[in-house]
Every structure is written in structure tokens, then in C-alpha cells.
Image 1: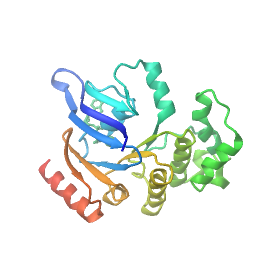
Image 2: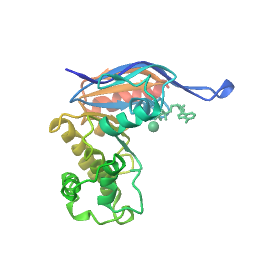
Image 3: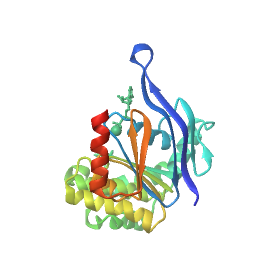
Image 4: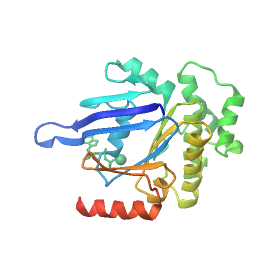
Length: 243
Ligand code: ADP
Ligand code: MG
């Protein structure tokens, strides 16, 4: 299998002096192309930092991050922006949609920013893929939380990124709506061969993945290939008890 994203001894620290915090204390992990990995761990364990480093949104203070064979370290900001635009899709808990734009305009935005004029069919297809064909003219305020997250996913998939990184994308959604979003992420892997990394604290959400990486105190402490929700919940409870 080809490695899509590789982290090698990645370290991340914030602040200086007494306020110095180690968010990642040397994390190594590989994410193969066409696989779905969940990243779990107690609050503050470094999950978001790991995702931001993999997404080229943050520069680690040590170690290397490789995306599709490209080492991010030597890249300047322009090259990082291009790589992010062309290969990486990021989905956040709070959707990050622009409130003044319609669903269709939000979905078209990444392509416009890349200097392309998206075809209306292309935008319509992306919205249809997430079950929102009838909502293209709606603004975010006219959509439910689940619909907003699906617009965000449509905006991600229209650029056809090889890697999709999602930070608690179902954190604000009810369980039915979450299921729909998770099935969309699973479909990106199964139907389109994308690499998905999902940060979540929900064992049911993690159950959609092929394996689960567990973080604690900025370190990788376990990897579970049995993604049964009960098993994951028990392992998480044990981890939280020791933190
Ligand atoms: P998680 O997503 O698992 O909750 P984070 O990666 O957000 O954890 O944070 C890991 C640690 O780094 C925490 O102790 C957090 O307070 C700290 N941290 C994260 N971002 C910053 C920042 N921008 N400035 C200072 N500390 C931060
Ligand atoms: Mg987080």
C-alpha cells in the first residue's frame, strides 16, 4: 500500500518559559492511501495539533510530515498553500462556511480561489453527493447543523483531495445526522479511495474507521484494529482514568 500521510517523530510546542506546553511529544504514524483512521484521546492530548500538522496548517517544532511523498518541512508558505489546496481537504466541527454565500457559492469557493471557474454541474454534483441537491441557493443560516456540515463536505470533495482530515466533524450534531456525515466520510474511502483521518471523541464515530489511534499527553499510546464501539469506549475509559 502507498503511504499517503506520514508523521515521523513530530513534536509541537506552544508558548515559552513557564507557559511552555508540549502538544505533541514525538508522534510517528503512517496513514496509507485508501484507509480510514480515527484519532482519539482525552481533551488536550494533541489530536487537533496532529491534524493541523498533517494538514500543513501548522509547522511542527520537530520531526517530519510527508504528504503524498512530499516532505512539508522545506516548503515555503506558497508551496504549502498549493499543496493544501490540491491534495488536502480539512473539515472542522464548526463548518467554517461563509455566511454571506449560498451553499453552491460556498462549495464553489475552493475552486475559485484556485483560479478556476467551476461549472454549475460540478457544484450541483458535489451538493447532490451529500444529499443537498435542493439546497444550493440556501445560506448557512437557513440550513440545519447537519446540512451545514454536508455543505462543508461538498466543498471539500469538489476539489478531489487525496487526503481528507476531519476534526470532530460530528461534535455538534445529533446521532442521526452524525451517521449521515460519517457514512459520507466512509464513502470517500470505499468509493473514491481517499485517505480519511477523523479526530473524534465518540466511539461510535470511530467505529466507522478501519483502525483507531489513541493519543495521551501528546504521545501515541495505542492502536486498535478492532473498532467495535464497546471495545473503543472501554479503552478510552481506561485511558481517561490514567490521565
Ligand atoms: P485536543 O485536540 O486533543 O483537545 P490540542 O491539540 O488542541 O488537543 O491541544 C494539545 C495541547 O496544546 C493542549 O494542552 C492545548 O492547551 C495546547 N494548545 C493547543 N493549541 C495551542 C495554542 N495555539 N497555544 C497554546 N497552547 C495550545
Ligand atoms: Mg481538538
